[in-house]
Image (cartoon, rainbow, N blue to C red; front, side):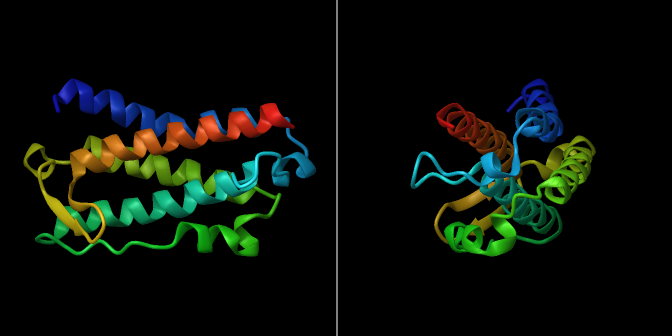
Length: 156
């Protein structure tokens, strides 16, 4: 990945929280928890999931940057999404957390030394994961969940 491509992706990481906030700004609590496209998650579950998933990924990035080939623990995202805190209509806290997390994550990526980008962690399902791969993957992850939320909103 070139430095320019990397910078473009880092800016997408930085912009995701604002995109999510704009998308959900006018939704009522009932709309946030509605699931018109079962089995897809509600808009609220998507927001909570982005926080859970991206916190996990941020920690993985720090482990990769500081340890030699660290193990990267998977988690059951559907089980996490089933908890009450992951489906609550009050998403103000999670949106704030997502915003601050992405500010810090983007800063981490922007200031990472060039030689660190090829470092890897070992994921039991996905194999070796470099910081380049994580950056690309989590930009796509955010875009996929924005699209899922847009589909859900359109179906309301």
